[in-house]
Length: 141
Image (tube, rainbow, N blue to C red; front, side, top):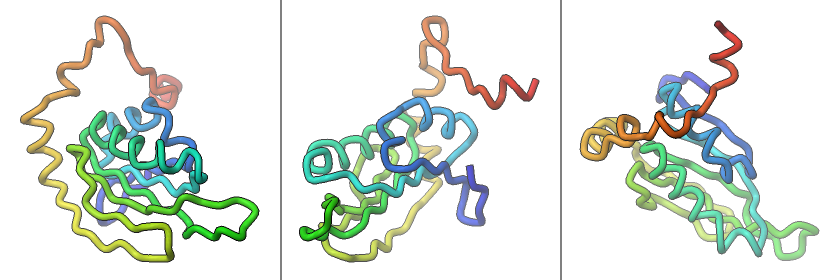
């Protein structure tokens, strides 16, 4: 996790967005934002790219930012594009298409506490049935 002037940022790389456990660990460590640089292709991009961003944001009640290379139809690997910022309720706050572009959007971390108070998922998790083990924390003891 990166502790920056703009908040605590959990970083994953591309395929990591598919795994809820990494996002949950970052959330349990106090992340405000998850950032995933990635390059989903023309098959997985339209089906999964935005869906996974929104799922990670909703599951963990935090912001998710993704950045992707612009689409180059002549390249050996054709990326879907669509860099995006998603809010803690799963709402797409800003996105690009497949061309080269820049997103500028405001992130209001006070909304995180509002969302978590109105829908206290962390408190309502069924720890009696399952637990996420943060190996880093276990090995520190």
